Image (cartoon, rainbow, N blue to C red; front, side):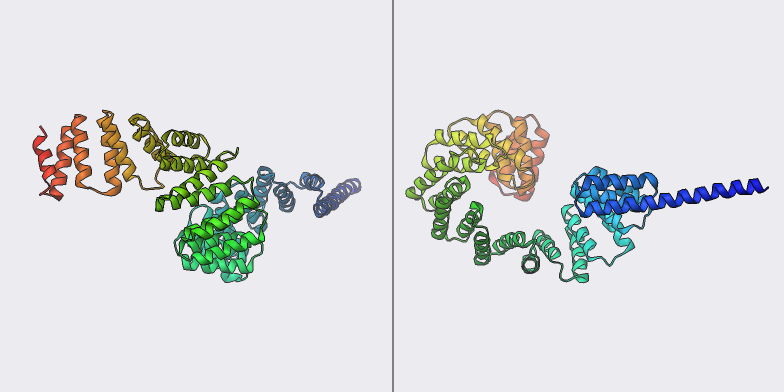
Length: 455
Protein backbone atom coordinates (compact mmCIF):
# COMPACT_ATOMS: atom_id res chain seq x y z
CA UNK A 1 0.00 0.00 0.00
CA UNK A 2 2.80 2.36 0.86
CA UNK A 3 4.51 1.64 -2.42
CA UNK A 4 1.25 2.21 -4.33
CA UNK A 5 0.59 5.45 -2.46
CA UNK A 6 4.07 6.72 -3.18
CA UNK A 7 3.73 5.78 -6.85
CA UNK A 8 0.37 7.51 -7.19
CA UNK A 9 1.65 10.59 -5.41
CA UNK A 10 4.68 10.64 -7.66
CA UNK A 11 2.59 10.44 -10.82
CA UNK A 12 0.22 13.13 -9.57
CA UNK A 13 3.14 15.34 -8.66
CA UNK A 14 4.69 14.82 -12.07
CA UNK A 15 1.44 15.70 -13.75
CA UNK A 16 1.04 18.84 -11.66
CA UNK A 17 4.62 19.82 -12.34
CA UNK A 18 4.17 19.19 -16.06
CA UNK A 19 0.95 21.22 -16.11
CA UNK A 20 2.63 24.08 -14.27
CA UNK A 21 5.59 23.90 -16.62
CA UNK A 22 3.27 23.95 -19.65
CA UNK A 23 1.37 26.90 -18.20
CA UNK A 24 4.60 28.80 -17.56
CA UNK A 25 5.81 28.01 -21.11
CA UNK A 26 2.44 29.04 -22.53
CA UNK A 27 2.58 32.35 -20.69
CA UNK A 28 6.18 32.85 -21.79
CA UNK A 29 5.27 32.27 -25.44
CA UNK A 30 2.30 34.62 -25.22
CA UNK A 31 4.55 37.27 -23.68
CA UNK A 32 7.21 36.71 -26.33
CA UNK A 33 4.58 37.05 -29.02
CA UNK A 34 3.29 40.29 -27.52
CA UNK A 35 6.83 41.67 -27.38
CA UNK A 36 7.43 40.68 -31.01
CA UNK A 37 4.19 42.43 -32.06
CA UNK A 38 5.24 45.58 -30.20
CA UNK A 39 8.60 45.47 -32.00
CA UNK A 40 6.86 44.78 -35.34
CA UNK A 41 8.62 41.43 -35.69
CA UNK A 42 5.57 39.73 -37.13
CA UNK A 43 7.17 36.42 -38.15
CA UNK A 44 8.55 35.89 -34.63
CA UNK A 45 5.14 36.80 -33.19
CA UNK A 46 3.42 34.17 -35.32
CA UNK A 47 6.04 31.60 -34.29
CA UNK A 48 5.50 32.37 -30.61
CA UNK A 49 1.69 32.29 -30.79
CA UNK A 50 1.86 29.06 -32.84
CA UNK A 51 3.95 27.51 -30.07
CA UNK A 52 1.36 28.61 -27.53
CA UNK A 53 -1.41 27.02 -29.63
CA UNK A 54 0.57 23.79 -29.83
CA UNK A 55 0.66 23.72 -26.03
CA UNK A 56 -3.00 24.74 -25.59
CA UNK A 57 -5.03 24.12 -28.77
CA UNK A 58 -8.20 25.23 -26.99
CA UNK A 59 -6.83 28.67 -26.08
CA UNK A 60 -9.08 31.39 -27.41
CA UNK A 61 -6.45 34.01 -26.55
CA UNK A 62 -3.66 32.40 -28.59
CA UNK A 63 -5.86 32.00 -31.66
CA UNK A 64 -7.08 35.59 -31.30
CA UNK A 65 -3.57 36.99 -31.04
CA UNK A 66 -2.22 35.00 -33.99
CA UNK A 67 -5.29 35.89 -36.06
CA UNK A 68 -4.73 39.58 -35.28
CA UNK A 69 -1.12 39.32 -36.51
CA UNK A 70 -2.22 37.57 -39.71
CA UNK A 71 -4.78 40.35 -40.24
CA UNK A 72 -2.13 43.01 -39.76
CA UNK A 73 0.02 41.24 -42.37
CA UNK A 74 -2.95 41.12 -44.81
CA UNK A 75 -2.91 37.28 -44.69
CA UNK A 76 -6.68 37.34 -44.46
CA UNK A 77 -7.50 33.67 -45.06
CA UNK A 78 -5.14 32.63 -42.24
CA UNK A 79 -6.64 35.35 -40.06
CA UNK A 80 -10.14 34.03 -40.76
CA UNK A 81 -9.16 30.50 -39.67
CA UNK A 82 -7.70 31.66 -36.36
CA UNK A 83 -10.44 34.13 -35.55
CA UNK A 84 -13.20 31.63 -36.36
CA UNK A 85 -11.48 29.15 -34.06
CA UNK A 86 -11.32 31.78 -31.33
CA UNK A 87 -15.06 32.46 -31.65
CA UNK A 88 -15.86 28.74 -31.70
CA UNK A 89 -13.92 28.30 -28.46
CA UNK A 90 -15.56 31.35 -26.84
CA UNK A 91 -18.69 32.64 -28.64
CA UNK A 92 -18.70 35.70 -26.35
CA UNK A 93 -15.20 36.86 -27.39
CA UNK A 94 -16.15 40.33 -28.58
CA UNK A 95 -12.78 41.34 -29.99
CA UNK A 96 -12.53 38.15 -32.05
CA UNK A 97 -16.04 38.74 -33.44
CA UNK A 98 -15.18 42.34 -34.34
CA UNK A 99 -11.92 41.34 -36.01
CA UNK A 100 -13.79 38.71 -38.04
CA UNK A 101 -16.01 41.51 -39.31
CA UNK A 102 -12.93 43.61 -40.11
CA UNK A 103 -11.27 40.78 -42.05
CA UNK A 104 -14.43 40.17 -44.09
CA UNK A 105 -14.54 43.89 -44.81
CA UNK A 106 -10.95 43.72 -46.09
CA UNK A 107 -11.94 40.78 -48.29
CA UNK A 108 -14.84 42.84 -49.71
CA UNK A 109 -17.46 40.57 -48.19
CA UNK A 110 -19.83 43.16 -46.68
CA UNK A 111 -22.68 40.71 -46.05
CA UNK A 112 -20.48 38.47 -43.90
CA UNK A 113 -19.02 41.50 -42.14
CA UNK A 114 -22.57 42.63 -41.34
CA UNK A 115 -23.32 39.26 -39.73
CA UNK A 116 -20.28 39.55 -37.46
CA UNK A 117 -20.91 43.15 -36.41
CA UNK A 118 -24.57 42.36 -35.71
CA UNK A 119 -23.44 39.38 -33.59
CA UNK A 120 -21.13 41.69 -31.64
CA UNK A 121 -23.92 44.23 -31.01
CA UNK A 122 -26.29 41.47 -29.90
CA UNK A 123 -23.83 40.89 -27.04
CA UNK A 124 -22.88 44.54 -26.41
CA UNK A 125 -24.81 47.34 -28.10
CA UNK A 126 -22.82 50.14 -26.46
CA UNK A 127 -19.91 50.25 -28.93
CA UNK A 128 -20.10 53.31 -31.18
CA UNK A 129 -17.14 51.98 -33.16
CA UNK A 130 -18.92 48.74 -34.09
CA UNK A 131 -22.17 50.56 -34.91
CA UNK A 132 -20.09 52.67 -37.32
CA UNK A 133 -18.49 49.60 -38.88
CA UNK A 134 -21.92 48.01 -39.26
CA UNK A 135 -23.25 51.14 -40.96
CA UNK A 136 -20.27 51.24 -43.34
CA UNK A 137 -20.71 47.56 -44.26
CA UNK A 138 -24.43 48.02 -44.85
CA UNK A 139 -23.68 51.03 -47.07
CA UNK A 140 -21.20 49.00 -49.10
CA UNK A 141 -23.82 46.25 -49.43
CA UNK A 142 -26.33 48.78 -50.80
CA UNK A 143 -28.56 48.75 -47.71
CA UNK A 144 -28.75 52.52 -47.32
CA UNK A 145 -31.72 52.77 -44.95
CA UNK A 146 -30.26 50.20 -42.57
CA UNK A 147 -26.86 51.88 -42.86
CA UNK A 148 -28.33 55.22 -41.81
CA UNK A 149 -29.87 53.78 -38.64
CA UNK A 150 -26.57 52.17 -37.59
CA UNK A 151 -24.59 55.35 -38.26
CA UNK A 152 -27.08 57.50 -36.37
CA UNK A 153 -26.78 55.13 -33.41
CA UNK A 154 -22.98 55.38 -33.58
CA UNK A 155 -23.20 59.18 -33.45
CA UNK A 156 -25.70 59.03 -30.62
CA UNK A 157 -23.17 57.02 -28.60
CA UNK A 158 -20.16 59.10 -29.72
CA UNK A 159 -20.99 62.49 -31.31
CA UNK A 160 -17.29 63.08 -32.03
CA UNK A 161 -17.01 60.13 -34.45
CA UNK A 162 -16.10 62.07 -37.59
CA UNK A 163 -15.92 59.07 -39.93
CA UNK A 164 -19.53 58.23 -39.12
CA UNK A 165 -20.58 61.72 -40.23
CA UNK A 166 -18.74 61.12 -43.51
CA UNK A 167 -20.41 57.81 -44.33
CA UNK A 168 -23.79 59.15 -43.21
CA UNK A 169 -23.27 62.03 -45.64
CA UNK A 170 -22.69 59.54 -48.46
CA UNK A 171 -25.84 57.66 -47.45
CA UNK A 172 -27.93 60.85 -47.46
CA UNK A 173 -26.46 61.80 -50.83
CA UNK A 174 -27.47 58.45 -52.31
CA UNK A 175 -30.94 58.89 -50.80
CA UNK A 176 -31.11 62.30 -52.52
CA UNK A 177 -31.49 64.02 -49.15
CA UNK A 178 -28.98 66.67 -50.14
CA UNK A 179 -29.34 69.24 -47.33
CA UNK A 180 -28.84 66.50 -44.73
CA UNK A 181 -25.90 65.13 -46.74
CA UNK A 182 -24.31 68.59 -46.74
CA UNK A 183 -24.65 68.96 -42.97
CA UNK A 184 -23.13 65.53 -42.30
CA UNK A 185 -20.22 66.07 -44.67
CA UNK A 186 -19.53 69.54 -43.29
CA UNK A 187 -19.36 68.01 -39.83
CA UNK A 188 -17.07 65.24 -41.12
CA UNK A 189 -14.70 67.79 -42.69
CA UNK A 190 -14.60 69.67 -39.37
CA UNK A 191 -14.15 66.69 -37.06
CA UNK A 192 -12.17 64.01 -38.89
CA UNK A 193 -8.69 64.85 -40.24
CA UNK A 194 -8.42 61.31 -41.63
CA UNK A 195 -11.43 61.69 -43.93
CA UNK A 196 -11.27 65.47 -44.46
CA UNK A 197 -10.14 65.29 -48.10
CA UNK A 198 -12.71 62.66 -49.02
CA UNK A 199 -15.40 64.58 -47.15
CA UNK A 200 -14.64 67.78 -49.04
CA UNK A 201 -14.69 65.93 -52.36
CA UNK A 202 -18.10 64.46 -51.53
CA UNK A 203 -19.27 67.82 -50.20
CA UNK A 204 -18.36 69.53 -53.48
CA UNK A 205 -20.36 66.89 -55.35
CA UNK A 206 -23.40 67.35 -53.07
CA UNK A 207 -23.24 71.15 -53.40
CA UNK A 208 -23.15 70.78 -57.18
CA UNK A 209 -26.11 68.37 -57.18
CA UNK A 210 -28.05 70.80 -55.00
CA UNK A 211 -27.31 73.73 -57.31
CA UNK A 212 -24.89 75.35 -54.82
CA UNK A 213 -22.23 75.88 -57.48
CA UNK A 214 -20.30 78.61 -55.67
CA UNK A 215 -19.91 76.44 -52.57
CA UNK A 216 -18.86 73.49 -54.74
CA UNK A 217 -16.20 75.57 -56.46
CA UNK A 218 -14.94 76.89 -53.11
CA UNK A 219 -14.46 73.36 -51.82
CA UNK A 220 -12.65 72.27 -54.96
CA UNK A 221 -10.42 75.35 -54.87
CA UNK A 222 -9.52 74.56 -51.27
CA UNK A 223 -8.62 70.99 -52.26
CA UNK A 224 -6.52 72.28 -55.17
CA UNK A 225 -4.66 74.63 -52.82
CA UNK A 226 -3.99 71.82 -50.33
CA UNK A 227 -2.83 69.43 -53.07
CA UNK A 228 -1.16 71.77 -55.53
CA UNK A 229 0.93 69.04 -57.14
CA UNK A 230 -2.05 67.22 -58.69
CA UNK A 231 -3.42 68.22 -62.08
CA UNK A 232 -6.79 66.61 -61.47
CA UNK A 233 -7.50 69.00 -58.57
CA UNK A 234 -7.21 72.04 -60.82
CA UNK A 235 -9.11 70.27 -63.59
CA UNK A 236 -11.98 69.59 -61.18
CA UNK A 237 -12.18 73.33 -60.39
CA UNK A 238 -12.33 74.22 -64.08
CA UNK A 239 -15.03 71.68 -64.87
CA UNK A 240 -17.09 72.83 -61.88
CA UNK A 241 -16.86 76.40 -63.14
CA UNK A 242 -18.03 75.23 -66.56
CA UNK A 243 -21.02 73.39 -65.04
CA UNK A 244 -21.93 76.58 -63.20
CA UNK A 245 -22.01 78.47 -66.51
CA UNK A 246 -18.75 80.34 -65.83
CA UNK A 247 -17.16 79.44 -69.12
CA UNK A 248 -14.56 82.23 -69.19
CA UNK A 249 -13.38 81.38 -65.67
CA UNK A 250 -13.23 77.69 -66.62
CA UNK A 251 -11.08 78.42 -69.66
CA UNK A 252 -8.70 80.51 -67.54
CA UNK A 253 -8.44 77.83 -64.84
CA UNK A 254 -7.90 75.01 -67.31
CA UNK A 255 -5.40 77.13 -69.24
CA UNK A 256 -3.41 77.42 -66.00
CA UNK A 257 -3.72 73.64 -65.59
CA UNK A 258 -2.27 73.07 -69.06
CA UNK A 259 0.60 75.47 -68.35
CA UNK A 260 1.41 73.93 -64.98
CA UNK A 261 0.94 70.31 -66.04
CA UNK A 262 1.89 70.09 -69.74
CA UNK A 263 2.18 66.30 -69.55
CA UNK A 264 -1.31 65.77 -68.11
CA UNK A 265 -3.75 64.68 -70.85
CA UNK A 266 -6.75 65.28 -68.57
CA UNK A 267 -5.98 69.02 -68.48
CA UNK A 268 -6.02 69.29 -72.30
CA UNK A 269 -9.11 67.05 -72.46
CA UNK A 270 -11.00 69.21 -69.97
CA UNK A 271 -10.05 72.41 -71.80
CA UNK A 272 -11.16 70.84 -75.08
CA UNK A 273 -14.45 69.79 -73.48
CA UNK A 274 -15.19 73.35 -72.35
CA UNK A 275 -14.35 74.84 -75.76
CA UNK A 276 -16.43 72.16 -77.53
CA UNK A 277 -19.46 72.73 -75.29
CA UNK A 278 -19.32 76.44 -76.05
CA UNK A 279 -18.84 75.81 -79.77
CA UNK A 280 -21.93 73.60 -79.90
CA UNK A 281 -24.05 76.02 -77.93
CA UNK A 282 -23.08 79.14 -79.87
CA UNK A 283 -22.15 77.70 -83.26
CA UNK A 284 -18.72 79.26 -82.69
CA UNK A 285 -16.14 78.13 -85.25
CA UNK A 286 -13.24 79.75 -83.36
CA UNK A 287 -14.16 77.84 -80.20
CA UNK A 288 -14.47 74.64 -82.25
CA UNK A 289 -10.95 75.07 -83.62
CA UNK A 290 -9.61 75.61 -80.10
CA UNK A 291 -11.47 72.50 -78.96
CA UNK A 292 -9.91 70.47 -81.77
CA UNK A 293 -6.46 71.74 -80.90
CA UNK A 294 -6.77 70.87 -77.21
CA UNK A 295 -8.42 67.49 -77.81
CA UNK A 296 -5.83 66.45 -80.40
CA UNK A 297 -3.13 67.33 -77.89
CA UNK A 298 -4.85 65.18 -75.25
CA UNK A 299 -5.39 62.29 -77.68
CA UNK A 300 -1.72 62.27 -78.67
CA UNK A 301 -0.75 61.01 -75.20
CA UNK A 302 -0.32 57.28 -74.68
CA UNK A 303 -2.70 57.28 -71.72
CA UNK A 304 -5.51 59.22 -73.40
CA UNK A 305 -8.92 57.93 -72.35
CA UNK A 306 -11.86 56.65 -74.37
CA UNK A 307 -13.77 59.79 -73.34
CA UNK A 308 -11.06 61.98 -74.87
CA UNK A 309 -11.27 60.21 -78.23
CA UNK A 310 -15.08 60.33 -78.08
CA UNK A 311 -14.98 64.11 -77.57
CA UNK A 312 -12.47 64.44 -80.39
CA UNK A 313 -14.78 62.44 -82.64
CA UNK A 314 -17.68 64.73 -81.71
CA UNK A 315 -15.57 67.78 -82.50
CA UNK A 316 -14.53 66.44 -85.93
CA UNK A 317 -18.15 65.56 -86.67
CA UNK A 318 -19.22 69.10 -85.76
CA UNK A 319 -16.48 70.39 -88.06
CA UNK A 320 -17.89 68.26 -90.92
CA UNK A 321 -14.92 65.89 -91.24
CA UNK A 322 -16.70 62.52 -90.93
CA UNK A 323 -13.63 60.45 -91.79
CA UNK A 324 -11.57 62.04 -89.01
CA UNK A 325 -14.56 61.70 -86.68
CA UNK A 326 -14.86 57.99 -87.40
CA UNK A 327 -11.13 57.42 -86.88
CA UNK A 328 -11.30 59.07 -83.48
CA UNK A 329 -14.45 57.18 -82.50
CA UNK A 330 -12.97 53.84 -83.56
CA UNK A 331 -10.07 54.58 -81.22
CA UNK A 332 -12.54 55.53 -78.49
CA UNK A 333 -14.34 52.18 -78.64
CA UNK A 334 -11.02 50.33 -78.67
CA UNK A 335 -9.94 51.85 -75.32
CA UNK A 336 -10.95 50.41 -71.96
CA UNK A 337 -13.04 51.40 -70.16
CA UNK A 338 -15.11 52.30 -73.22
CA UNK A 339 -17.15 55.49 -73.22
CA UNK A 340 -20.70 54.37 -74.14
CA UNK A 341 -21.38 57.72 -75.83
CA UNK A 342 -18.67 56.89 -78.37
CA UNK A 343 -20.97 54.21 -79.81
CA UNK A 344 -23.83 56.71 -80.07
CA UNK A 345 -21.66 59.14 -81.98
CA UNK A 346 -20.26 56.34 -84.15
CA UNK A 347 -23.83 55.42 -85.06
CA UNK A 348 -24.54 59.02 -86.07
CA UNK A 349 -21.41 59.21 -88.23
CA UNK A 350 -21.95 55.87 -89.99
CA UNK A 351 -25.65 56.44 -90.66
CA UNK A 352 -24.81 59.78 -92.27
CA UNK A 353 -22.43 57.84 -94.49
CA UNK A 354 -25.22 55.41 -95.45
CA UNK A 355 -23.81 52.41 -93.53
CA UNK A 356 -26.98 51.26 -91.81
CA UNK A 357 -25.59 47.94 -90.55
CA UNK A 358 -22.62 49.64 -88.87
CA UNK A 359 -24.91 52.23 -87.31
CA UNK A 360 -27.23 49.60 -85.87
CA UNK A 361 -24.31 47.54 -84.56
CA UNK A 362 -22.98 50.62 -82.76
CA UNK A 363 -26.37 51.29 -81.19
CA UNK A 364 -26.68 47.67 -80.06
CA UNK A 365 -23.27 47.87 -78.38
CA UNK A 366 -24.32 51.13 -76.70
CA UNK A 367 -27.49 49.47 -75.36
CA UNK A 368 -25.46 46.52 -74.06
CA UNK A 369 -22.97 48.77 -72.27
CA UNK A 370 -25.57 51.04 -70.72
CA UNK A 371 -27.97 48.29 -69.64
CA UNK A 372 -30.49 49.72 -67.19
CA UNK A 373 -28.36 52.70 -66.13
CA UNK A 374 -29.89 55.18 -68.58
CA UNK A 375 -33.20 55.53 -70.43
CA UNK A 376 -33.07 53.68 -73.74
CA UNK A 377 -36.40 54.56 -75.34
CA UNK A 378 -34.92 56.74 -78.10
CA UNK A 379 -32.05 54.35 -78.79
CA UNK A 380 -34.42 51.38 -78.86
CA UNK A 381 -36.63 53.14 -81.40
CA UNK A 382 -33.59 53.95 -83.55
CA UNK A 383 -32.43 50.32 -83.45
CA UNK A 384 -35.91 49.22 -84.48
CA UNK A 385 -36.05 51.72 -87.35
CA UNK A 386 -32.65 50.66 -88.65
CA UNK A 387 -33.66 46.99 -88.36
CA UNK A 388 -36.68 47.74 -90.56
CA UNK A 389 -34.41 49.37 -93.13
CA UNK A 390 -32.21 46.27 -93.02
CA UNK A 391 -35.20 44.03 -93.66
CA UNK A 392 -35.29 42.48 -90.18
CA UNK A 393 -38.81 43.23 -88.91
CA UNK A 394 -38.78 40.52 -86.21
CA UNK A 395 -35.83 42.22 -84.51
CA UNK A 396 -37.56 45.57 -84.99
CA UNK A 397 -40.61 44.26 -83.09
CA UNK A 398 -38.45 43.45 -80.09
CA UNK A 399 -36.88 46.93 -79.98
CA UNK A 400 -40.14 48.78 -80.63
CA UNK A 401 -41.55 46.83 -77.67
CA UNK A 402 -38.65 47.99 -75.50
CA UNK A 403 -39.11 51.60 -76.60
CA UNK A 404 -42.80 51.45 -75.67
CA UNK A 405 -42.05 49.76 -72.34
CA UNK A 406 -39.70 52.60 -71.39
CA UNK A 407 -41.49 55.65 -72.78
CA UNK A 408 -45.10 54.50 -72.61
CA UNK A 409 -47.53 53.87 -75.51
CA UNK A 410 -47.71 56.45 -78.29
CA UNK A 411 -49.58 56.30 -81.57
CA UNK A 412 -46.36 56.78 -83.57
CA UNK A 413 -44.49 53.91 -81.91
CA UNK A 414 -47.52 51.62 -81.92
CA UNK A 415 -48.06 52.28 -85.62
CA UNK A 416 -44.44 51.35 -86.37
CA UNK A 417 -44.69 48.28 -84.09
CA UNK A 418 -47.84 47.10 -85.87
CA UNK A 419 -46.13 47.54 -89.24
CA UNK A 420 -43.08 45.57 -88.05
CA UNK A 421 -45.27 42.79 -86.63
CA UNK A 422 -47.22 42.60 -89.90
CA UNK A 423 -44.03 42.41 -91.99
CA UNK A 424 -42.61 39.73 -89.70
CA UNK A 425 -45.71 37.62 -90.31
CA UNK A 426 -47.36 38.10 -86.92
CA UNK A 427 -50.80 39.40 -87.98
CA UNK A 428 -52.37 38.62 -84.60
CA UNK A 429 -49.89 40.88 -82.85
CA UNK A 430 -50.31 43.60 -85.50
CA UNK A 431 -54.10 43.65 -84.99
CA UNK A 432 -53.71 43.62 -81.23
CA UNK A 433 -51.35 46.63 -81.25
CA UNK A 434 -53.59 48.65 -83.58
CA UNK A 435 -56.71 47.86 -81.54
CA UNK A 436 -54.99 48.94 -78.32
CA UNK A 437 -53.80 52.17 -79.94
CA UNK A 438 -57.26 52.94 -81.38
CA UNK A 439 -58.84 52.35 -77.98
CA UNK A 440 -56.63 55.15 -76.63
CA UNK A 441 -56.96 57.42 -79.72
CA UNK A 442 -60.15 56.41 -81.59
CA UNK A 443 -59.92 59.41 -83.91
CA UNK A 444 -56.35 58.80 -85.11
CA UNK A 445 -56.50 58.71 -88.92
CA UNK A 446 -53.21 56.87 -89.45
CA UNK A 447 -54.18 54.10 -87.06
CA UNK A 448 -57.54 53.75 -88.79
CA UNK A 449 -55.76 53.44 -92.16
CA UNK A 450 -53.46 50.77 -90.76
CA UNK A 451 -56.48 48.87 -89.40
CA UNK A 452 -58.07 48.83 -92.86
CA UNK A 453 -54.81 47.74 -94.53
CA UNK A 454 -54.22 44.78 -92.26
CA UNK A 455 -55.53 41.48 -93.74
